[in-house]
Image 1 (cartoon, rainbow, N blue to C red):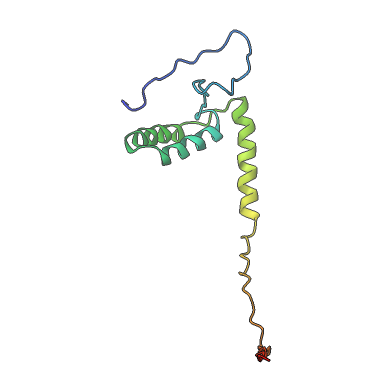
Image 2 (cartoon, rainbow, N blue to C red):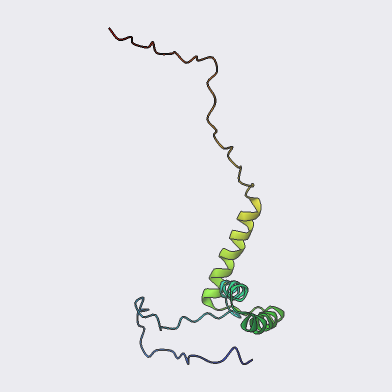
Amino acid sequence: MPELTRRYIVMTMATEGPFDLRDPDTPFVLKPWKDPAALRALQTYCEHCYPELAVELEAWIAAISAGPAVRGGVGTRNEQHIGARARASAKRPPARRQKPKAKTKVVGRKKVKKKARGRH
């Protein structure tokens, strides 16, 4: 998998530290084999990335999907919410489209001509 190369080595920090929102190079790690939300994020990324990477990601997604469901702490919590959202969206009726509001023509009004003023 030449496109899926190791770009970062991520290690557990010795102490808990806050995630630095201002540092664009800080890696954010998702574990798609443990977290169904991470797997959905990976699928969405796959749909929007360049073709060579998409092919390799599709193979990785297929391998994860074919394997057993292994859940971590966050993955277990996310799984409950994914199921709840799927049930809620299945029950929700389709949104009604509003009819466009067009201006109605006023019928019956006559234009009143102004009288020409004569010169005296």
